[in-house]
Length: 180
Image 1 (cartoon, rainbow, N blue to C red):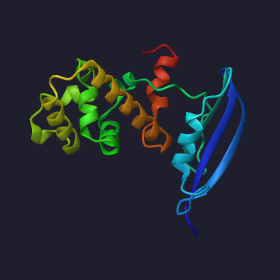
Image 2: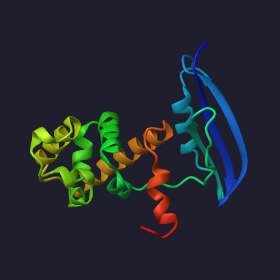
Image 3: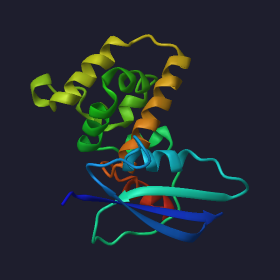
Image 4: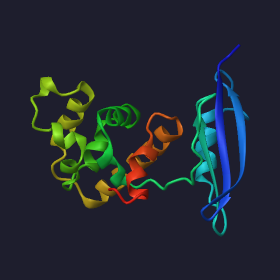
């Protein structure tokens, strides 16, 4: 018996959830050809609906409580709240070059990577050490290149959120309650 992947899809208007559906995927099989659960979620989340209607799909853990919330749009600045694990997931997903370029223009100083920038290389996590080396290579890049890289980073973060590898709900909780 193959492992099941559970996808929760919410449908709503403005700031209200109107309907919910649950879809089960076999981890080893595909949905409608070559679409697996992750691409299923990505395709749903890319749809642009009319008026204030929205649809949001997310992979959830089976038999675990799930907080039903209206999806939060992801902005590049969320990277400032990433810790070591989140940055390592992002490096694994996207590679170093685009992240290094996206962190140019002073943003690195406000991130976890900026906090470990002055540590000796042997004390840094391997993936992040490689990211810092890549960052140091890109000292002069155009604003357009930085913006393009930041868009790639945001897309990679969305993919990681859908896959359940990064939890942005916890990172945006303070903003919702005015504690950040």
